[in-house]
Length: 498
Image 1 (cartoon, rainbow, N blue to C red):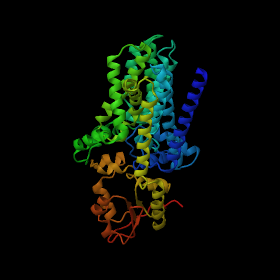
Image 2: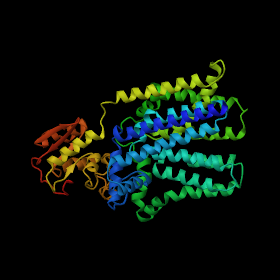
Image 3: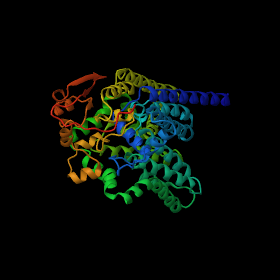
Image 4: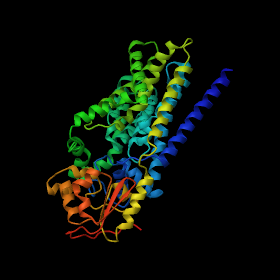
């Protein structure tokens, strides 16, 4: 009976993982859409065309994810479906790795399967994880690499050789080389290794781990040698000094973001359970040292990532996706602490079922609420309109998403629209491939662009597009303006892709 029960539990576990995985992948190929993934896709497209980030265009991100997307485009096609499929698989991989960790290593054996199912649900059906992790940005890959590094570090601590430490370093470094938002995992893993290593020479393992971390940053070091000023600006200076330019009251914005979890059922349940988990770990020392140290590592990663991301001004709710798998481990510890007291026999079925149901219902509600949100299908209509009205050899100004869909490189300085907020000396703007908002206004007014597309009402008003252009059309809640600007000199440029 025990063997039959274990087999049935494993079958249910695999079925749940398969069901959630299928749902995530379907979402990634149909509904998933993030406005900011446009400049990531344009960067990958430019890399595929032989351009170099920082040197040939502005891209204030670590380059690994862009190079991965470019490689996928080279192998398959320049299509958002390709990058979304990879991102969806990364999300699924992170969910499976963490759920499997809990199934194998959860301190209370009787709760392992239930806890694993809860982790699979709260990670795989988290609204923010699914919405942003399945985009072409680095959320999915960063989350997967962080969890994989965690698993390798845990495995390596109890083995005499340093191979797992090397793997953990490579994975943690790759996460940081994909997005700087994962940077805290590197020192946290290193400190944990030094404290809790159980077999082998910790000094050798630490050196090997650090070496593994450095390797994925080789492209950044190469770019730093080749173009020091451009690389430093994109990787360091922009993030440290220019992210908050023209943001208004950044403090109020951050307070709103950091308190949003109080209005989310999923975040509130997970947050309260995680707090209960921390209290349980603080008060109880009876579980074996090995299991407790692994839970400590998950706790350190969740707290370290949360504090670090909260200091990114401005910060955003989607940035916190990287701490969700580790917070889930704390949450199931808290679920055991609370649930074992509320049920008569201390068994996990009802507590786990309640959390799973709340998570699934909240996810379903979020999908329903977003049923009319913008998708790639809408932007394809916008791109088709831009292509239709723009004559050959005429320039157009549009969102990065449109340039990507039409498979045309943007004019220099238009690859990263947020850079328009910056006002730098002319020499630096040319070096960093930046066009300021004032300069862009002059170019539009002078008729450099035959067609202008935007989805922002303030852009229309600020640039006086209604007065400048003779033609306009509303497409999917965005506007396309075209025609010769009165009094403008006009400009020719590359033909729109056929």
